[in-house]
Image (cartoon, rainbow, N blue to C red):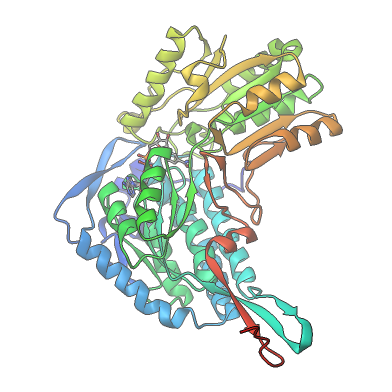
Length: 515
Ligand SMILES: NC(=O)C1=CN([C@@H]2O[C@H](COP(=O)(O)OP(=O)(O)OC[C@H]3O[C@@H](n4cnc5c(N)ncnc54)[C@H](O)[C@@H]3O)[C@@H](O)[C@H]2O)C=CC1
């Protein structure tokens, strides 16, 4: 992950005190209505609401109203009505809207990244990196839209068949809190490219940027009603995916919620894409470039405060180099600045919520009870900036003396906790790496080409990184094996999950009928 060029850094303190035009536009992102219906912001009817907290400071930003059944119905109706015309646009025309939206995102990267940090507490450069990646994704699907096509088959006797790739209808999207803008973009761009319309529900923890995406689409020429946002907690999500007029649900989040969503979709035989959790292995052989392997292990564990579904949190290191690897790892992690996420040199920002921090700390406690040793970090850090006093800042944690049956090694933690395990042979480590209910990602560091290929073939996962980790270039499909999910995002393959094939048979002669 490269640092993009430096931008103007904003501080949270400035957010509350500065009265510049730029800051006023940012306060608008928080105070304005957060649902998006028929191309404009609207307030949900509620009546219930929840607090929106800025993770960096622990301060309350506002109350957010839960969308009720009527709010969801209105959004789905708007999407259904818009679907009739949007699905008739040519792919090329739809693509032009998406490409324009990508350009607008780039022109607003500062505003979007600032708001994303407010919602998530992630470092500003990382938020900017995410947002620019989303511009690329939307542009990519803008290009793909014009190339969506069917197939042609010549049959005997002058008969022929062809296929038409058609949209599914109205898609319900439900997102998690770790990459809020990315979830809205990764789900809406292929859906819209195929001619579907969408109702998107962001995580209640991070509601701000999905609605900004709605405004950007609107500015880019997307007809009102094609992309709508309903805010709310799990119940709003449940209403959305149980609605009979939703044709497909695309979800990112935890396995238990994914399972509930799949059950809700089963009733009406809805299409479903699930991007769920993981407990991915990263394997480092003794012939690897250890400096690169250390960088890979950090990318695999500590970016976004460790809150990444594809993280390679089971780090298997060949026994003969484990000591050297660990020393290099600690040396590098020690230098990572934990701090105010609005400062450009901060590498570790705030944990998303006290609840998530408690989960992480509980797991560290369980690991110790089960015999693991904390060799580095794991504790809360008090920042010198009193403005961030209400946020929770966790020092990345490195555990050694881990064994495969420990809970910390088997279960997804979703925080900055790296478990170091050692191994002696290739066969042994492949079996252990695959011994998981999850199959989202995996990584290997080795200079041996043949071994790398053997490893790729043997791993039961959706994405494998060879000599790198957690890179998501636009166009490369992403999704899980096993309990990590169903379907693919971020590549051309995701079109299969947002469209359906109609087969057309044309008879070229007389009907051949034995009756
Ligand atoms: N795979 C991934 O990318 C992510 C995994 N997680 C995992 O999930 C755990 C819990 O995080 P949460 O945000 O609470 O995840 P979650 O799975 O509970 O929630 C994700 C989304 O689903 C919605 N939702 C909750 N219940 C629903 C229901 N019955 N029907 C429809 N929608 C529903 C939520 O409002 C949110 O928008 C984390 O500790 C982490 O382990 C969290 C975020 C992302």
